[in-house]
Length: 96
Image 1: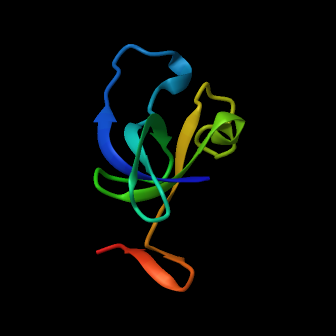
Image 2: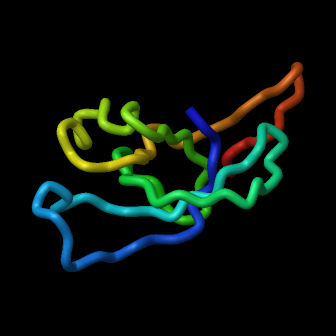
Image 3: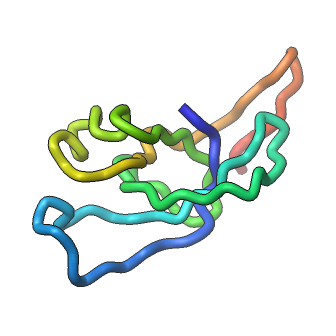
């Protein structure tokens, strides 16, 4: 799993029928220190995240392991919304 920040949405009215009713989000990967890595991914949102939220996401074959994405052609999925994270005893992020 990777840590990222939801920075936008993607709307695609023409898509494969296996992708119908899925919500797509633009996720920018961040380090455990909260710094931008410059890497972006379009991920299926399996948990109802919103722009500005910090999330955990998976890519590759792991992205097809959620109930929502099972047997669907997706390569990234948001699978959790982060409330807090701590590194070496220091809180690095706390959801407002």
